[in-house]
Amino acid sequence: MTPKLNVVPFVSVDHMMKLVLQVGVERFLTELSAYVEEDFRRWESFDKVARVAAHSDEGVIELMPTSDGAAYAFKYVNGHPKNTRDGRQTVTAFGVLADVANGYPVLLTEMTILTALRTAATSAVAARHLARPDSRTMAIIGNGAQAEFQAIAMKALLGVDRLRLHDIDLAASAKCARNLEGLGFDIRICASTAEAVEGADIVTTVTADKQNATILTDNLVGAGLHINAVGGDCPGKTELHADILRRAAIFVEYPPQTRIEGEIQQLAPDHPVSELWQVIDGRTPGRRDAAQITLFDSVGFATEDFSALRYVSDKLVEAPFFEELDLLADPDEPRDLFGMLLRAAA
Image (spheres, rainbow, N blue to C red):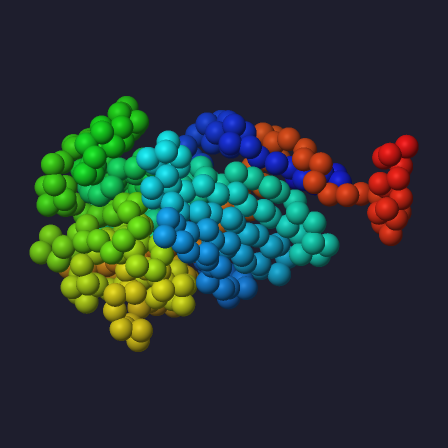
């Protein structure tokens, strides 16, 4: 996609939905996962910094920037769990992809839907490297906005086809089951976390409350389980009992960020963890045996947004679901910006 000098392709929520539906949700997640994995393999080429966060009693607003030297990307994202009381999303986002050579943005897009997709894609990439190869049953604890995306991504990449759903709000589980009906899953709504986890190969925790919580306790975690901890994503917010962390082999995206925001904020600063990119690149072992407990302490990192923006930009070549946004001033003479204003008045 080569935009005009004075306009930027803008993907609205409506356009994003049309793009995802034209590609197909499962195919979209599969292709996006390939972009995520490719960028993890070239991890060392990226500028990396923990996200810039503005915390309040009500939630958090964050900027997540990165660059590979050729392209620059950032995402603006919030997390406000109480928003659902007012009929608003807990998480909303938008993102920008820019050309490092000239500084011009080449894409502006909604990222509320796209973040759910890239989070699920990253979870599935991690699980493919860390879960037992025969994993087919997943328990999802927390059945809100991200649950369906997580399920479909795990099906697409690992063949997961049995779901055990639990949420303290039964309506959320019913919503999730209804949305996934007909997509090839055996679905059971469970009355407790213990019921959901029993017999599961993968447990995904993806709750929204902004607090230290114990969604999963140590006595529920048996040998060979892979835990995909998605909900803990800011200081003071966790989902797992600390004893689970002490038993598990822990894998993270970017340790300086995860030690502040992830499950491992409960542990000593020097507690050993492995970096996911090194597993994907073959530098560090992932799962060592069938009995090992593995934990992906996922908080989300800027390179994953970079991958998502790069993927969408490429897809727009064949599926032009965007509008041209008049975002950049483009005077006839680059140094005559004021003259451009005068000519507009005339």
